[in-house]
Amino acid sequence: MAINQPHIRPRNRAERIHEDFDHRREALRERLQDQDFLANKGIGNEIGFYTFCYDPSLEFECRAYVDELKADAQAGKLPCNLEVFNLYDVMLDICEQRRILRAIPRREAKVGSEAQIKELQKPCSSKSFAQYLLEHTQPHQPGDVIMVTGVGEVFPLLRVHNLLNDMLADFGTVPVVVMYPGSFDGRQLKLFNKENASNYYRAFDIS
Image 1 (cartoon, helix red, strand yellow):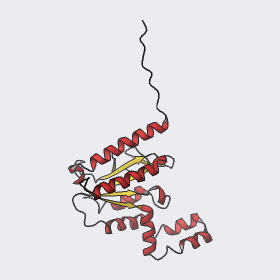
Image 2 (tube, helix red, strand yellow):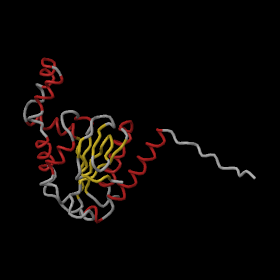
Image 3 (cartoon, helix red, strand yellow):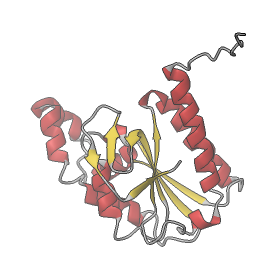
Image 4 (tube, one colour):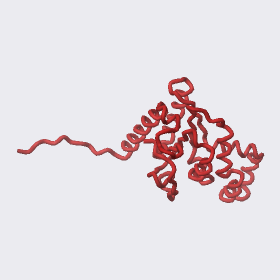
C-alpha cells in the first residue's frame, strides 16, 4: 500500500540566503553575550578574528542589523562595548588627515579612477587603516568588541585579509568581527562571492 509522503517545497535561493543570514544574526548576538568570547577565550592561542559572512544582496539588511546591535550595546542590552568602524568612513578620515580629500575628485577626473586608486594605495594602505583602528580603540578593555563594516565599499583599494594581517600584532586581546559581503570557508575569503579568493587562515566564521 502506498504511503502518502508530505510534500516538501524546495527553498529558493532568496529563502536560503535569508535563512543563513538569520542563523548568523542569532549566532553573533549569542557571541556578544558570551563572557569567554568577550574575554577572547575559547579558541586556543589563536587571535580573535571573526567573519560574519552574508550574501551581498543583503547589504542593507546587514547595515540595519549592525545599527540594531550598536543601539542595544549602548542601551545596556548587550554586555559589551561595541565599537563599529566603517572602512569607507575611515578612508575619508585618513584622506582628510593627510589633507588630500578635497583634491581627490579633481585628480580622478584628470587621471581616471584606476590611476587614482593606485595613488591612494600609499596614504590609504592597510597599515594606515590598522593604525587608525588602533589609535581609535586603545587601550583595549575587557568587553570591547571591534566591528568592521564597509568591506565592499573600499574594494579594490583595500583587501580585508591585508588589513587583518596588519592588525595581528596589536589586537590580540580584543575580538574583531568583520562583516563580510561574501564567503569564507576557513581558508579563503571570496568577496561578493565572485572575486578571486584570497587565502587567509587566522579568522573564524562567527557561526
